[in-house]
Image (cartoon, rainbow, N blue to C red; front, side, top):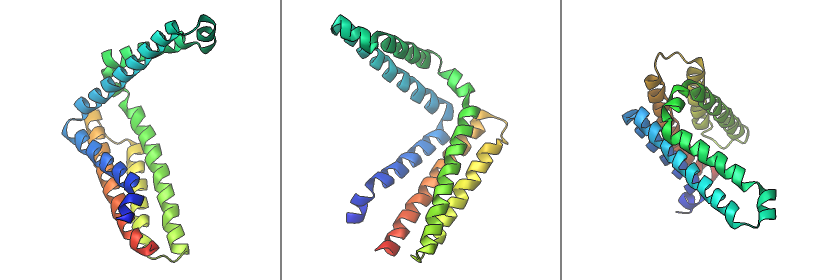
Length: 180
């Protein structure tokens, strides 16, 4: 139980990655549009709060904080997200490359984890090494961008999220016994 409490954040992140991966597999365009619209609504609310806050604040302080400009910028960004989620979907290949870079960096971090485990002779160093190889391989496939359609890219991203999260949970549980 102490192990679960100590690693609850990692396990929750992995479960969240699996959930997102499944949703991307089921309806990638719909899921992405919903996320973009939800983000836009959050920006609209933040912009509305900032704009109202500007008018409720003392004139000198409001002028120094520039909350009206910030609020209006948030309102415009939120409106764009709500009204034009397709624009973000059209730019997905660029976002996928950024995702590939993030996965590559995570894979390099896992490679260090494996090498550290090997150098510290904790055993089972091969588990984070396998996870590192999978992460780095997925990153190279994403960065090479050999796919013809955005839908396939979304599906690949969903599958890579699920596989990577599952491997991270396996490594976490197996590394528990080598640390204790």
